Length: 538
Image (cartoon, rainbow, N blue to C red; front, side):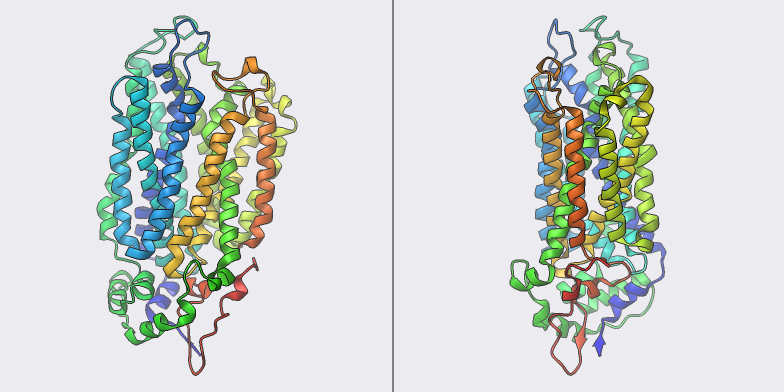
């Protein structure tokens, strides 16, 4: 007969209470900030080019050279990848709560630092901007494994998927807030500092005050993080970490008694038995981990990697696609601040119509139809819509067909978010043992950011026109937007295949998935108790 720890069972069967929503808001505001900080840079890269890389007499406005654009867009991802690995590991070593505050303060300091990039010289500004955005990304990276792990360990098993997905869904509001705030700032500056279009007066089209626009947009990302710092520090450590990793049964029972408002027994002897059980002491680099969770880790890393190649190449450079089909006018027909306004408006519409609804559809359905079904469906429709955009691409470039392009493009985003973009975040927080949960989530998330780097850097070059005379300044000819979309369609198809390596965790406790929190009376612990989860999705 298997015995379970009372404190963990109490969390699993608890009804949805106020503390669940408090945890969602506290963890979710970190993700709101993450999304704002990561995606706001795509709103201002064109402006940076106009301000710091203007060439007198050029037909087109100044633009960031390829290596600079790659650095500005990609350096935060490099920081995020590093932070996911480091803070994921640290969260299992020091505890989720202790590390949680570090990541938030790093994000606040570096958001402000990004906007205060020194000097008016291009090299100095870009260098300091990249420096602060790397460390901003480092802090953001820590938020991924810690927020997911904390929410999964606080949640009940009935609605755990919805709670973790709700934390991640705050990313949608962060993207939306970035676009709306950029619209407000650019509108205010446009009204106050009127300027001619570039093709009318190249020098006057970028007013000196435009330098404040990008700095304000970048710096405001510090506010939501700062506002939630106090509440993060007040959250108690999760009972699963305290009991199963720190081995402090008394503290776990005390913390959760306050949270759940019920009396819980400390069960120190039972915790001692669990922690001494050798079948639950294997490390990350062991044969036993490889046997129990090797395919799981391959599944979570590969699907997140493939998803982010497609997702981030679209998100970061959708302004270029909108320009290609004529939704954003040619740069030379606008002044600098007008261009920021147009780009922000386009991204806000996409976020409002597809990105945000997609996240919340996942929240609504993840505990009804399961993670596996949502992820498979999302990858399938992303593949279909990518090919629907790519194959008749010339058709979509005609003025009369632009709305159709935007609808299908929005549906691609919708099924990314009502699909693998949410589930790849949820599942790694559910299927690994408590002592390795944060680390494995960090590894999975880092694989995703590696995909984001591939998508972001690769798409800069791949989407360039085949005709050298029609490429952006400084870029070699690429394969064009159409062929780039075909490549992304193929990437999504591979996502379908690798989804079959990910187990279904719907309605099951974290310990059921990992094989922890079970002591068999009168017999040796069953070493293979978690092995049936290896590759079965349902």
